[in-house]
Amino acid sequence: MPPRLSTVKLARPMRQSLGQRRQGQPQLMHGYGLCCWSSIMRTPKLVIFDCDGVMVDSREADRCFYNDILSAFGCPPMTREQTDYVFMHDARTGLRFLFRDHPEVSAAEVEMVAAESDFTPYLRRMTLVPGLVDFLHALRRHGFTAISTNRAGSMQELLAAFELSHLFDFVMTAAVAPMPKPAPDGMALILGHFGLQPEEALYLGDTLVDAQYAAASGVPFVAFGNPVLEARYHAATFAEVRALPPVQALLAGAPRPRP
Image (tube, rainbow, N blue to C red; front, side, top):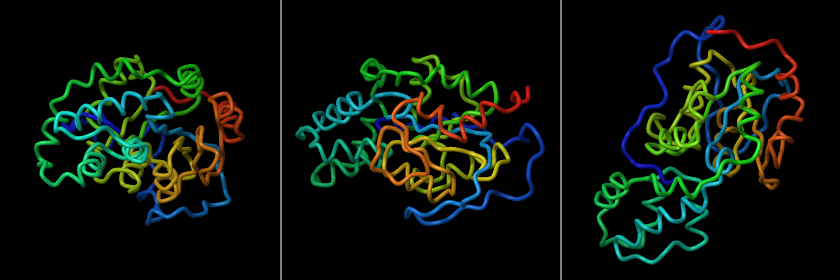
């Protein structure tokens, strides 16, 4: 993801959840390998979204951002392999990957240039995934919504640009999580914030990193727009997500508690 590298904390410190908080922390499965989830699927109370490729189509914006950084140091544009890699990872990891064959370039200087870049022009190259806003409105009548992304500083700008901030109860970014995805740290903080167990949430993602993240966290995974990923469910559109049994159960449930 191509975020500004400055730390912008969208997530807030944990607070008492709406409803009674369960005792103890969510039990997580460690390691990043894909694994089987519990066969018991509760009606979810929380739907967690990856950002890039799920909420927004940002591939062209990513490509331009990273190519501009490469150009600033006299390096050639990204290959297809490099583009695929940076699209899945946080900015610092992506930049290190891109400049690994350029030892003459200072990593600290690369990060400084990226951090000082104005991300606004790249936002214009993004588009919302069709059906997202209507789906969020439907979800929020009955449950809670969150984001878990490997973006960092640019996430606040993105939410503001697309007028999405009010549609999410919690936002976890790479600037806040102790370790970026696929490490399960961010998911543990999200679940702890709501006082939920992993099987009481769903995670929508579109990359192998997302699948590994969900598996390491024990949260049922919906592979969005990527049929080759190992997942509990697959969906190509938000209409298909809405038709999934656990989502149908959520939308048929009681209205969400008012704060």
